[in-house]
Length: 369
Image (cartoon, rainbow, N blue to C red; front, side, top):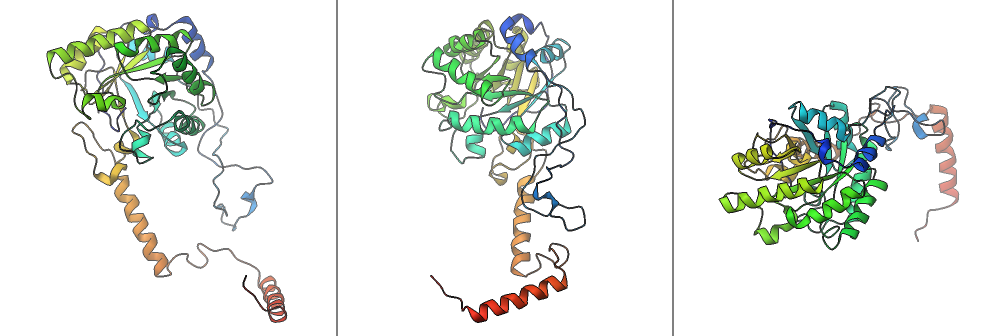
């Protein structure tokens, strides 16, 4: 996916999702459902942890961040069965991208986000690339592992980066398995319609749920001539519909429709037996997705604003102000404040230290190497 997504969702007439999912896929995703006691509301550490270094106020006295834990039951992870149930009930599906532990934790804390996509858009929002093309499997595995550690409730979808599935079905299955086995994803996403249907089918037959992606496919920007809306002519719209039907026949459980005219996306959604997730494709899709950085107003510090993007916060501006305030406080010696941000030592211990130090420094003059 590109770095952005659409807004609210309006479900289409829905039919059974499970009729397009293989038994192996259902078994795989069902086995991944779990009930866990991991949460994000408290911090605990082992008895040997530096957490014992405290200033008496209950605040941690160290810069490392232990993994948040809690004994509160947070419920099971969403499965394709749950997604299918929502689809049949015309309940819009919610999806966000996440790229790291903090974003995944926040999504879990808020709740109600059905799917998380660890998207290759992180190549642009996090790694500084001009497109998603340079992103590698190593990059995706690293970020997917971080997201899995931070979220135990949403259905996790790992993006297949450019070059990881196109050459052959065997390579596609191999790399899809890596996202499942090494990064604990629940499904994978790949771009392309008819031309990639065989790859999608091979992965589905290997027991891995597949999400398709058609319309604007960022990994093909050189062929498309850039990040441009797709489906504005009858010929293009027909080709996208054919792509959608090919992916459905291949067994995908859902597909992303990116930057397609809203009427075209709605019509395509109504022809399918699987959900569509819209990004810049209007309110007639089965669900919606936004890129995390764009949604919170962090990417490019406000410079990125496609027509369909709705920013729900202005995090970039807040971060800029925080850096400015920190710089000014340090230069003015307002930070750290004595007593508030510092640790104490008993007077007798400090006196003993300075006496030893003075004796040592007078007896052994300091030398430089």
